[in-house]
Image (tube, rainbow, N blue to C red; front, side):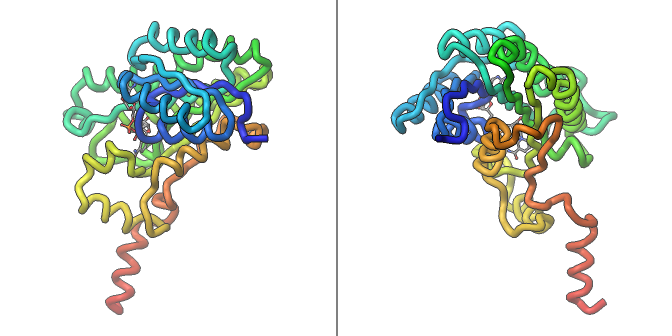
Length: 267
Ligand SMILES: NC(=O)c1ccc[n+]([C@@H]2O[C@H](COP(=O)([O-])OP(=O)(O)OC[C@H]3O[C@@H](n4cnc5c(N)ncnc54)[C@H](O)[C@@H]3O)[C@@H](O)[C@H]2O)c1
């Protein structure tokens, strides 16, 4: 028996990166997967690849900034496969140009990121929960970020929006646990998705590697496998948690790499 045999999953932002990995792994382990993305061509390609591999999948246009679009994707999933057992609220945006420090942040960008990164999680859950109750339970998984826990010189809205995802995850878990609905989040550190590979200069990648406890970068499948675990009944007693998948980047005293360098110099 496969790990999520017969479960029906909707994934937002499933055409690329973390969502794409989760879609492929869930389908490989027996789930019927709906890939929602505003890159509909990418979503269709992802679904076709799953079908070519012997899995079951469908694609739908989804704009995570719009309530009616999220509802339509949930309705489509239930029409297509009869139920909804796993909701992966994964879409999230960042903007290095406009999401700045608190004095200089563009306030329209603050609203946009709060809407897409946090409200879409609320809405995806709101529309999925009645179907999950009807199905006798389900698993909601949200993509947070390590930016929820550690501050940066810019990206104030991103960090605040992801911290809200961490807390909303607890509220959903507390409110619907008695309906056999679990809700957890995954907080990725830097993950080399196509977007990250294209946008982050090599010096910055080296900097991240230096501060990881492990000596390599994270990949989309590192998050995909965590999502698979949280979607499966293997995690049936875990709820309200945010699992940090970050290579030990935030594990130690932040001065440790510099301290080690000093020790090497014999100072
Ligand atoms: N990659 C990282 O290092 C990293 C680290 C921490 C958190 N995250 C979070 O992981 C999630 C996925 O990121 P990723 O790195 O896989 O990104 P990605 O760019 O590879 O994929 C994101 C997908 O979401 C889709 N999308 C974007 N906006 C959308 C919208 N409004 N409606 C519908 N679809 C939309 C894109 O078309 C794309 O297919 C995000 O929530 C992000 O904040 C990523």
